[in-house]
Length: 222
Length: 330
Image (cartoon, rainbow over all chains, first blue to last red; front, side):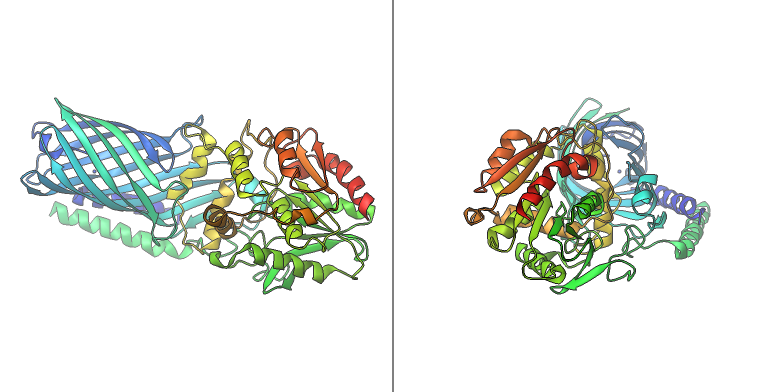
């Protein structure tokens, strides 16, 4: 069992690097010579979060950016909760200024409070389509964030109140559909962007406490 | 060739991952993330009334005046209210129950909950435990339980011989909204607020996936007792299992239909003991007086040295007010 999480993670990483397809990029202004993209962002993603990311641009026939992202919710305890994404995005279809891109990420997230500690392996797949110009872009996105498996370790407090609860690997642990809009402004070697949207649970009925996401970010390319 | 090897490696690792899934735990299965409820665990004390099975216990001499405790929530349980049991030594018959869909009581689909069903459960519970028609019945409600107790005497004023309410959230939609605004503010840059929201992406359940939703609701409890919380809650207190479907439905009813538990209260002329706590900054004397004024004959009393969870953290101070009140009506 203990090897399960490592096998799964390694498999996800390998697959993502093979299919790789991720960050809000203005494809129109991404030059073949620009190999590196650094991203800083702040927003709301199931909590008020701050994030940082790095992307590497492969100069392939179909433009591909592979990237790593890290985000964490705000609060006075720094590393107890976080989300990392490893994956990429591929500019699949270009018709003049119209671009369609696909993103795929493997996700590792952690959450801890007085009651529990959860470590989750998940995936996120999304598609973005819109108009990309030299100075701006605007697109719609739709995607699915799947929490594939989660290791739940109940705290001593939880076990004191409920001795029967079981710690271990739980599967499946849910998923959320996400859809929204994004847009940005590009200048020199920078993009600034904003995206906003909704989340909905996989049964299309239940929803998060705050079923919206929002992010503003900044990319630097060189 | 290199590409094929990588696909093969990924395939083998995925298969290895999937083959080890047999030891995985199912979050929907009761007894894993949350305890089993009465219909699944015969060792739990329960009563079957009004088409449901309630986790319930009674203490004391069944012939003594009955005090029925109503826990908070909606969706809480009576685990942190067992101090009330000490009324037995003053010759009261003390009855506890987890409300329908809460605590260790049987779960029901979200859309089956209504205020009338909760009132009918209480009527049936009183009938179940009552030993004679002359036995006096008192209701003791904390927080949401105080709202429910008020709703009961609002509808059946002749059925109850006395009521203690401890910081009922709001007896009308307007006062509930006022209290909620003052007590449960989400602070976007705060650790505990973000902790209450963050698990939504790791664990999600459908509308009636009770085990998952109940567990997720329990994860929000630290928000209620965070340092410097507005309600003056000192720390964690015991619970068995939250009732997420019940909470969600009653929030929906409040939001969509509103409520007013005071429309008929003028008929309940018996003195009502209205408790508020010294450390609950969101409640306070002014709000307590405003709520208590819905009753024709309220006695507003402050419980010193504690906050909203006064029954668990400062029972002696609560009992010092509750017992004289009950004794005056027995």
